[in-house]
Image (cartoon, rainbow, N blue to C red; front, side, top):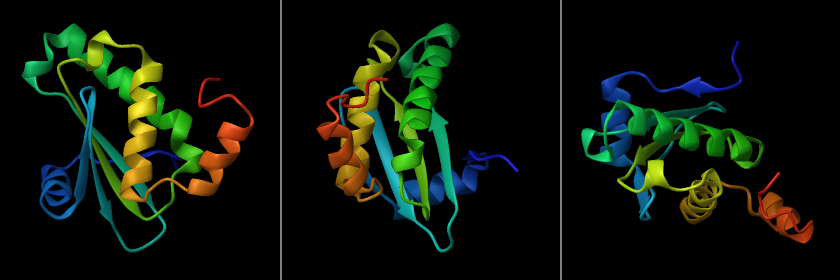
Length: 127
């Protein structure tokens, strides 16, 4: 079984949009929905406003890479939906990762203990 479980069905996205809480930044919108159980699922959406197919694909790659970097620090029991914005394909992945880290902290999905350890090491999420 895969370690990363993706959200693929429209009804799961819709439920996260309706019932979840959200955080917005210029490069990313994050929706978090607390669920029963110990699973952690994620989905990525990129609308046509982001740009052509190449830009939308880059936006998804950057968001996915940021998610994989933060995966071990995210608490289980959430459905996370990441929505690309117009600036997403034009920025470095570190910018998206920083925004995602801040969103997950605000939404309570990131374990604060791991966040503090990461800053003490001086890496601040850049590996």
